[in-house]
Length: 470
Image (cartoon, rainbow, N blue to C red):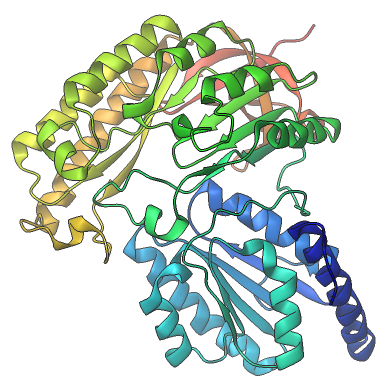
């Protein structure tokens, strides 16, 4: 029996075996094998998909932009009900593709697969699926594919939880100049509406030296900006043998030569420390943007949500952040229609939006998630009422954003150019330190570069600008 020094070495061994299998299939078919990953959900899922694609490309698959591929993976989300519905729609589509190509491999992974009732439904109603695994063992993709190749039957491998973090596996980044970096996994907060702790497990932090080593490698490959990812980055380091605070981690990352920008998400208001605010205020690399989910402006609803802060404490925190870090942009998450939300509760939310003056917000209609405490709560709000409140909220956020944009007109700012503008030829789109988008004239050669841009016009949630030469 083969003995491995670590899990990564074991998985690379399976990759070598699958590389031979892929090569044999290609010789038999007389063409390359293709793969496609469809990703639902958050940036954590996007990062997981980069890792999955890295493994597939290592064993010889070639990425394609269609689900009519030899191997199709669906990396699922289960935060809202419609994400489940979307997956079943996609499965109906690829069933037809598999009828045309019976050797096609279909895999499901991610948060949705951590729900027992979902896996049981897939087994019964979608028997053509070949591979089912969850959030805790995505590093095992090559091993699971080997099991599928050997058995020819459906492979199901779901872990309830894990304390394992596997380093040094391949990854295929979406962008060459910016990259997400996991600093921790899981969540301990158990907000009453949220399924994440049940499907992502308890908090576990990566060692700071492993994070630093990864970022140093990314910078050598041309990455200018990193986004540090965790369900609650403020809790980083608490479970390490030698505890390190998130603020201390940021200070270590700031020292990396060649790295221009540092972003992070998502902090929790109850854990955001004065130390973090001070580190951000004095930093030359941490971006002037804070995404701080409020979810509701009503202290009564926040208590039902199990958020552990009040409207008053959130407002005081937001005021402190803006005072200590001038020019910072603040964005947030807001849920409309949480069980028991009254008109008075909703007005409290609008009051917070007006006082904080958010630059933008991710707004959600409450979605009942089976298995969470909120799903069993009485006083579910009527859909028609929620719809009207949602529209009112969007108007207030739009006004707030428009007012904030006026302050930027005429200023020269540094912009990281991200892509060609999708609406107008000869234009590119970049992002300010405060995360606001800017559109200006330029060509593809600017993508990935930091350039000076003069802000000329506000458009509500974004700016128009002109590149400053020299």
